[in-house]
Image (cartoon, rainbow, N blue to C red; front, side, top):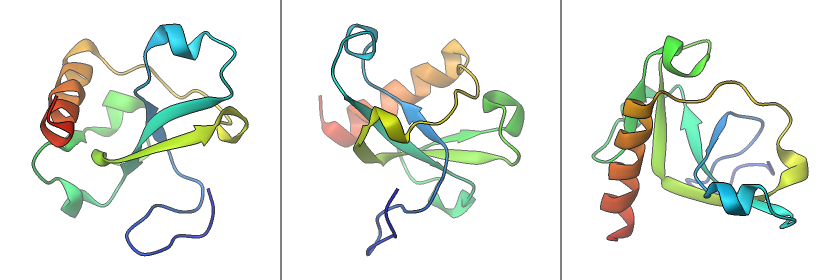
Length: 101
């Protein structure tokens, strides 16, 4: 990611792909993600707190559903782990809250 500007994310960090599988499996060169941070102060309404075991991360973390990004697939370097269905359900609920859909 580019250097951070304002409250935007920057530098290399984990993300959660939230784009639907048909788009993930398509030839589209971009992917929609939400940022994962270890800053637990960001556990705001809608954001989803994860234990480090939930996502294969080094620290407890937060899926910041209010920071949706469209990235070029080339920026995704490795797949860490799939989230458990309960964690994905909470992420979906957070996205619905933030997006109002």
